[in-house]
Image 1 (cartoon, protein in one colour):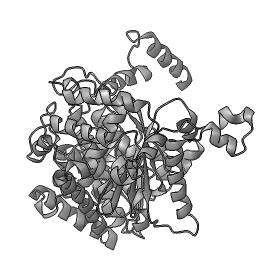
Image 2 (spheres, helix red, strand yellow):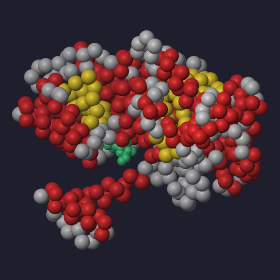
Image 3 (tube, protein in one colour):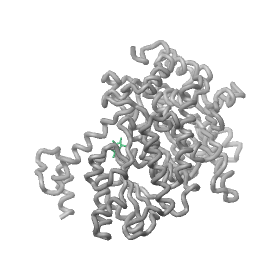
Image 4 (tube, protein in one colour):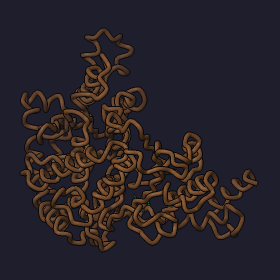
Length: 529
Ligand code: F6P
């Protein structure tokens, strides 16, 4: 039976009819201790969801739904290595990557090799073709082979190794690599080619150009082995590229791209902040795994985030989800979560291959606060869209410039409060706003948000935070009856691009194409020649 056909779903559908009319102002007035009832903690991590448009009863109904969907059973299947990614016949075992001493031998083995490699680079033992030390690492990868590590390296910049700079190039647009190479020296640059498949067009194109750049400088193909290492599952292709087998850091096909920063794909993180910090990142994720697998539903943070998302998406009909880290260091988190949530649960058929009968993953977007306040927050405050948001705040900053952090936190709290409560005409009038401007100076409020507070941004708390969202995505996939671990939706565009490239080069006829694509190709070709 579909979840939407259960009595639990119908109960929520009835329940939302009363709640839809309620304003957060009255929900707060009805229950002065809302914050105590509608927030939960794990260690030093706090999730406050009292500014969501729901009550304790809503949460009870949602938790019953989670029981009906058997989230706990699916979590056991995932952990036991069952091929729950059924369309690719693969297990989903990213949790094993951060299991510490309980990790499988192949995982521990690669971690040991990564550690030894980082030490050789950091100590200056690993040298480039001219004998110079490595000063710059360039990670070439895309999607999960870029976003997670890039986000983590930026997030942990305060712990950056003093002698190593880590950069990222992902885009097929030559502007990305060309701009980067301008600032690098081939003598002291080490490339990490990060690709699970080692066939991704963007990554292989950039990797080949980087190899040509190196060879143009050193002229000796045997030196590729000194300047290129790989994180991949495809040893054959890495070998063909010229990367020595001992410089390939392997992982397994049971690691999905968007869940791979804990694997060898995390090598640039370890190079940037040191292996001890990378291990702390894994420990933070492991801590969240243990919490997710053992905490009761009432205090289970990932489950709670998933239920809030389900409520907002399917019952309040908010199809947009903003993520606003009030931390410049976490500026790339929305981009990472975008892939994590939208590639996982942006699906239109369920596990049985039948069309879904409800909305699935909302559009996730966001940027670091306070910057967003000066661009799109206007729409959140006075536009016509219901947008559910996550605010992420850090109690302490790694960059304690006088006067900055308390103002940053004040802005974070002010925004979620203004979004929730708005400003009525009466309040605007009392504040001295002239009558003619009252319509423009009122704020409807009632925009739901959750605030996640971390004590600080350390490798450990970052690991907790990212794993929190990973398990949220898992729970939502179970609730929506989706396979969250495949991504067939990205294939069609890739296939079409490979058919269109020869047309653009004039090597194939375009007359079988649709008139728009043909017209655009003809137009582009005029300017290209
Ligand atoms: O095109 C989507 C995708 O398959 C992502 O899922 C993945 O993270 C990315 O491409 C990169 O893939 P690879 O690591 O194999 O280069």
